[in-house]
Image (cartoon, rainbow, N blue to C red; front, side):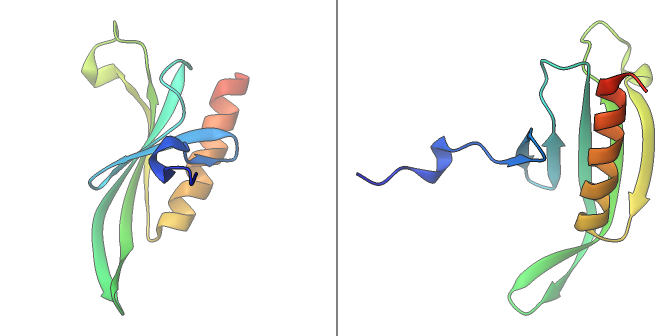
Length: 98
């Protein structure tokens, strides 16, 4: 019997990835921090849309924090790869307490 691909969680460098439209959540809500990636613009290359501007935010997951205090760091990159790379570094450092 073949497995359903929706049952297999997608991970990157040991942390879960979830996508909802142009938003990508990287990390676990059970941890103190997550990364929020938002694709702000993209262009067509062949039959695929490729991100050309991505917003990155390191956010606290504590539900008791005011919404204006949730974002710890933010930046923008010109590709999804660069954004994921920076996000992975931020998340690892934040979770390690550095």
